[in-house]
Image (cartoon, rainbow, N blue to C red; front, side, top):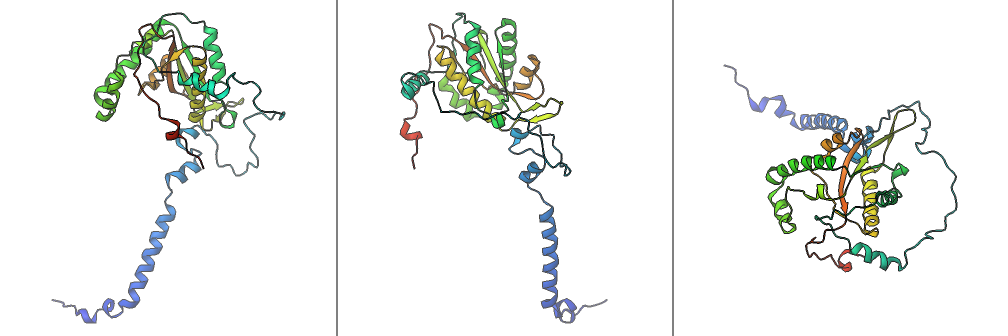
Length: 291
């Protein structure tokens, strides 16, 4: 049997030299692993997918032989602009009174609405600013009763699952004071449904994909302008975001793959027996910070 004399071991005798060498080797190995690691942010930068869906659809390659890219937006003359020249009588205070009067409703009248009013409100929404002026929005207006029924069937089926299985109990508890559930009668009662899709990318004249920067933010701003326009026209609406219904509704309306549903707005006049929760808004001193 071989016995090892620890006191005579080379490692023990020369530990003051061996330990630094071992630490250097370990450090080099760790540095190489760290260098090879790329954070999700770095991977997104390399794949042109910054900020998630805001950049989905980029088909640019790392073509080092390309010296200059062609802008997707056509070059145009810059013209003088002296600022806002068409203003609301009463100014900001009058505008505040208009939007402060707006409420989300779930009980609509069957009173008809000229389509021209809806069209003008959507024209107003189309004036919204957008990233690199890509205008990444599509407004689908539904008045056909049979299509509205199909929309309601899709949404109610998913909402039943949302309320009974998917939503956190705190979420459903928070909704109780609003008296909402999976039944959405307003989807067939409202004269119009406006489905607002964000275009996560567009197309160039040559068929290639065109980047739509900050598409969700841009479409959200356009939606805000649309809400104000509808209110100015005397119409009421309800902002809904049908959870897990986007793909089915996109297929129903035969919308292309580059579009994703952002918001669905039932639009019309309030019914005579319409009621809304007596909610209070935060005072300005709670939302305004000055420096």
